[in-house]
Length: 157
Length: 177
Image 1: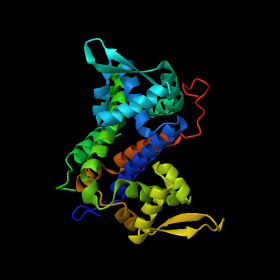
Image 2: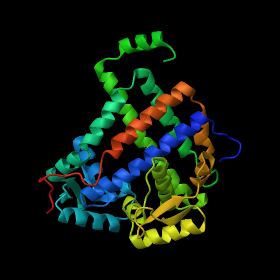
Image 3: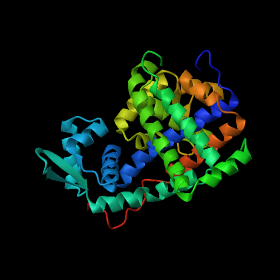
């Protein structure tokens, strides 16, 4: 335990619930990828593309790489794989001939929805079932936790 | 909860749309937290002593034990999405450092189960690594009622993500095949 700051029963349970959620989420990513016969990163790429397309944004290969924290060589390999399986299409960017635009296909939209749709609906239902006050509490808690982990680096960990 | 009058008054001002916005904000906050936590782990991985997969593995086995399930090397391999050879190396390492041990399954002599060494809450907390002090401080700001609300929310969310399994039938619309 961290010296100096003690965890009382309540806060230990809160931390545990947060970590259990995160562990379950990591496992979900791996399983969801497996059910679609792709890696968790491939699935993450598809979700990013579909989300951007949903709000009418076009994504270049480079932006995708930045989002995933991957080198351009790895992104190329990922896109080769997803193009071959029919999940994405690459087109030349009309505004920049040397850049590629990446689009998720309608087929992959349907597939992701079928795999993750029920989970998303359930998460939305859970969030909506919070009273205003509880939603504010949870929001404040998550924001404070985000700030806390943002402030942790090699020196303080 | 703490001030029903204010809550009712506030509620009056919130149309359906802003209620929707509130739940979207909560989901966005979950996502932002996840991204921040992933980045933090990437930054601190080397200083925490244990690698990310080791920590995930230990947490997975301990959580399963808490739920009364035992995990074998095969399920752990599946969970981590690594090769079985890497799992063997990982288990050797965790066994050497005394974090868990392999035992013969009481139900199947040829199968192994993974048994975490930590048994008490305190040992489990210690095994899972130090909780960064800043996170403990945030958790400590909640009173009992608030802690219960947050825990219930996180448990519901966990149940939602646990629903996804790798045997989901993706239907005939799958682009590949």
